[in-house]
Amino acid sequence: MAEVIFDHVTRIYPGNDKPSVDDLNLDIKDGEFLVLVGPSGCGKSTTLRMLAGLEEVNKGRILIGDKDVTTMQPKDRDIAMVFQNYALYPHMTVADNMGFALKIAGTPKDEIRKRVEKAAEILDLTEFLDRKPKALSGGQRQRVAMGRAIVREPKVFLMDEPLSNLDAKLRVQTRTQIAALQRQLGVTTLYVTHDQTEALTMGDRIAVIKLGILQQVGAPTELYDRPANVFVAGFIGSPSMNINTHPVVDGKAKVGEDTIDLPKDAVAKLTPEDNNEIIVGFRPEDATLATPDDENAFSLKVVNVEDLGSDGYIYGNILSDDAVSDDHNAMMSDQNKLTTIRVNPRALPQVGDVVKIKINPAKMHLFAPSTELRIN
Ligand SMILES: Nc1ncnc2c1ncn2[C@@H]1O[C@H](COP(=O)(O)OP(=O)(O)OP(=O)(O)O)[C@@H](O)[C@H]1O
Ligand SMILES: [Mg+2]
Image (tube, helix red, strand yellow):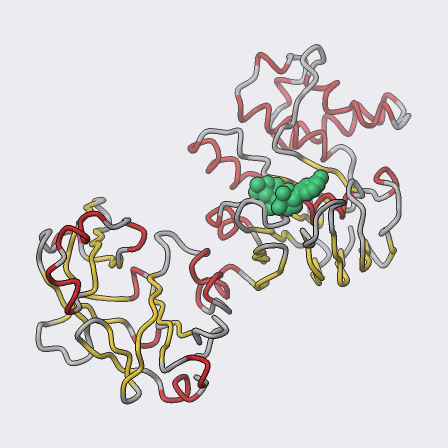
């Protein structure tokens, strides 16, 4: 087992003018499950591949358990990877697939058999050891791919979207199994995904990356409750946070034709570059329907309602002088741009209603427009 350190690590691919990973500092603790998450092309696989030794590091250092591995060959790094396309050898049995890397490394036969049987037991694959991959389900094949990594008893597991070949239901099951398995084995793990739900449910900590630049690292609840900037706020959480820029008038945010109170110390952090505006974010579950005379609420014109049984959601446009008349625009607008509020599914408003919405002041996320950084 080992700690992993990225120390000012940069990767610029030949022919590119911008780094794909830019000055990355990241510390993965011994035994920790760290999830690296971000949109497509943000540099997740590049980060993982640099740690594996499959991609050159142009600046900075990578350490595994105090040892500088920056220029070390992949085979000397004591890591095991599980890829998205974990092609199994079709002509080999499950046991041979799992033990193949050990066989190549010259491990004695009985030692291989021992480790494969142990891994199969952990992965619930014992009864399939003599089968060929084609006679397995997708989830079982995925577990064989995990088994190949486990038998190597590495210092670090690297996983690059290992669940993306599975259907939605199996993905949910398997992510629980992988997280439990990692905790049982206690092997330091770097897990890459673009799926923020996987990140929230699996990781001890999450590192969010955008365009090669690390945005925030923290426990799932830290990122959910206190996103450091607008990007993390919008990326983590489903349905996603409502985020809008509003004028600040007399220390309050002007939301459509209404105003809502803002904490004084946050407003004090705004600078002339912010042009008397503030970015207000709140999650769909952190607002409620208010009475029509509530002073600290804003008006929302409902354009869609959803009843999911356990929860209800309303989607609407913030009512302002120009939006009122523009019903056509409201209907045409992208659902993602609409304000989303979670409500009691037994008391859903109707499409076309104008309702008052009150944000829970303790759950408001405020950002400066000029920097997009958190100010409360
Ligand atoms: N061999 C390469 N040569 C040049 N550019 C590359 C190379 N590999 C990746 N890139 C670029 O580097 C950036 C990061 O790529 P990377 O594969 O790390 O993204 P990712 O976060 O894993 O994305 P995805 O979620 O789609 O897998 C992208 O802009 C990509 O186009
Ligand atoms: Mg990738």
